[in-house]
Length: 353
Image 1 (cartoon, helix red, strand yellow):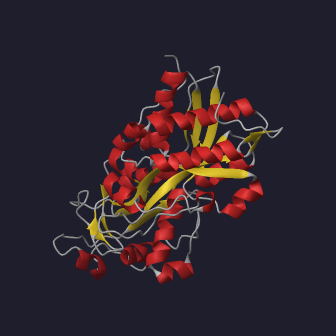
Image 2 (tube, one colour):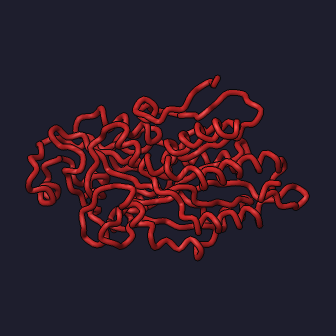
Image 3 (cartoon, rainbow, N blue to C red):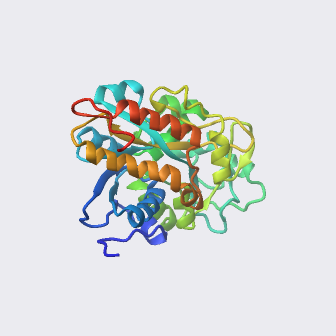
C-alpha cells in the first residue's frame, strides 16, 4: 500500500505536539475533515481500516474543535468535528446538522515523583481550585486530606491547559462550572477560556507532551492520550461521592441514561452524570455537516465512511478505550441523514444508491 503517511496510533503520534493529519495521498476518492483532537486516535484507526476496505482516503486535520467548527462553517472541509455540541439555534443559523460519533472521557494527569497512575485522588472542587490558582503546592492540605496514604512533595503545581479552541476544554470547564461556584462565576464555560494560571499546549498532543515533560505538572487529556503517553491519571470523585478510575466502562456508565432521542439537534452534554461507577468528565464527540450539498456524491462518500464506522468500527474504538454509539442512536442519526441532507435541487442523498 503506497501512502504519503501511514496512520499508526501509538506513542509517537499521540505525543507529538501540534497539528496532526490523517492522509493517504491523492487517491481517486478522498474525504476531508478537521476538528477535535479528542477522537483522533479512533478516527485514525478507522481511516486506516476503511482505506484498506473501500479504497477511500481520509484527510483529517486534528486542529481542535474550535478550528473544526470554523472550517465547516467556511466550507473548506467536507465535515467538521467538535467535542462541544452546537446548540440547535447555531446549527440552524449555519445550515448544519450534527450527530454523536463516539464517546470517551477527559482525565486529569499528573507528573509527581513516585505517584503512579490511579494512585492520587482528586475531587471536583479541589481540581477547580488548582486551575484557579488557589492551590499551588502538591502538599496543600486540601490534597493531602484526600490522599492520606501518599507522600506528597512540597512542590509547585505546574498547571497545563489547552492553548487552542478545544472541545476537550469545553468538557473540562463545563464540569468545573458544575462543581465550583467560583469557577462558574470567574471563568465559565467555552471551547477556550481566560485561564487564571498555567501554560498552554496545542491539542491533546501538546498537553500530553507538556504534562509528561514538566515536573509537578497537572493537565487534562482524552483518556487514550493518557494511556499512549504513559501519563499518571488520577482518580476523580463523581457526583455520587465515589472515587472512580477512568475506563471505557466508567464512560459507558455515565452515558447509560443519555436521552439522545429527546435532545434537539443531538445537543447533549454528559458531564457530572449520576451513578456510583460513572466517570464525571464524560462526553461525546460530534460530526458537523452541511444540510445543503453542492456536491452530493462527495457528501455520500462522507456518510458512507461514518456509516461504515458505526457498523464496523466499534471493536477498534473499544480497544482504544472509547465507547461506541449505541445501535438505537445510530438509527436516529441515519434517519436525520435521510431527512435533512440534500442536494442543491432538494433531493435526498442518503441512503446512497
